[in-house]
Image 1 (tube, rainbow, N blue to C red):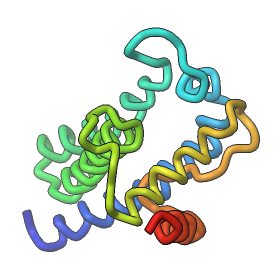
Image 2: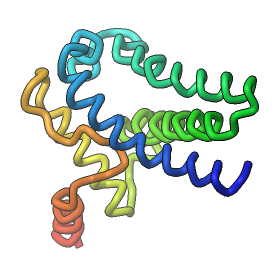
Image 3: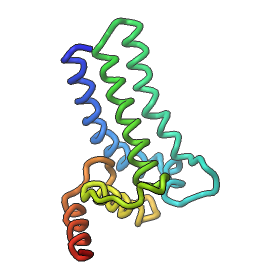
Image 4: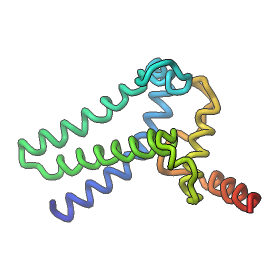
Length: 156
């Protein structure tokens, strides 16, 4: 990959945080709530209707990589890889770390990661379509970093 393509892949990765925030705020908590609702109100079973968003984001990534590869278009491939890398980060951060699917991740000494978890917890505090806050994943509002620091100071 060229320097331009690597830069574009990284730019796409970081731009996906904004894209995911907008999609979560206005689509998932909007007219696509019927797919997202079971992520806020747990239902039995391992899979949720909310998991369909994996495909919604994976299809453009796959198309960019596939069509870019067929047409020898490195820019398209780079964009597709940036989307895919964000999807991988989402799977690791949201599913494994935030929802603590692995027990050894339950305690973190990192103020940032605890703030990410707290912001997500505040998002899930509201069970309905309206009234939620914190729609992103990797960017966390500084107020949560301050809250975590205050909690850690109080515990020392």
